[in-house]
Length: 162
Image (cartoon, rainbow, N blue to C red; front, side, top):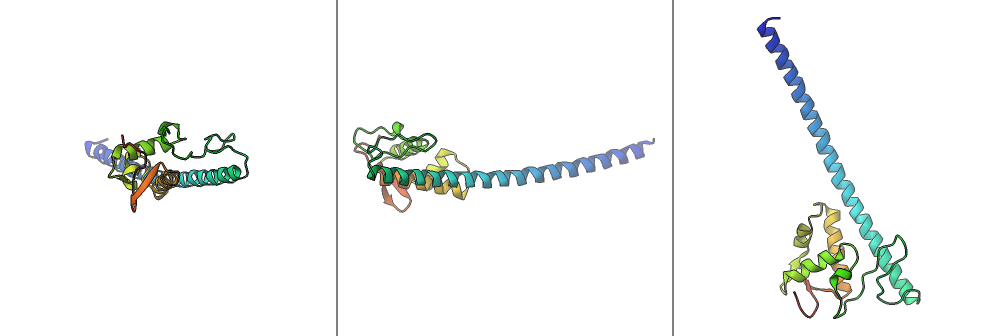
């Protein structure tokens, strides 16, 4: 086989390899997008589950089935968020709530935007993930842990801010 023929064969192999790499990159990118979508759906489902658990806890509390602010839950259910008290410790909150509460607390009296809380948590940059953070901030606000300073800006509602 001559040098020219070998060079041509090598070029064809390289061209085929480049096409294969491009096709693989497209498959990986499509899988990454699909994974982000699935993660967003999962976060929305978790948020809905938590909201349903909170509603269930309120109904049970009003029916006298669960003592107020116990923070306990039945097996497999998210724990309800307790109401804020002066002696309350954010680390006693369930799941990701302590991290969210501490980010807001550390922001000081001027507060922090929900988008910045989301960024600092390092969660996936999806609509569902951002909405999940907003839902959790709203829940903490309703329970007295945080206060809404202005649209999308939350501050620590406790007596001390650090």
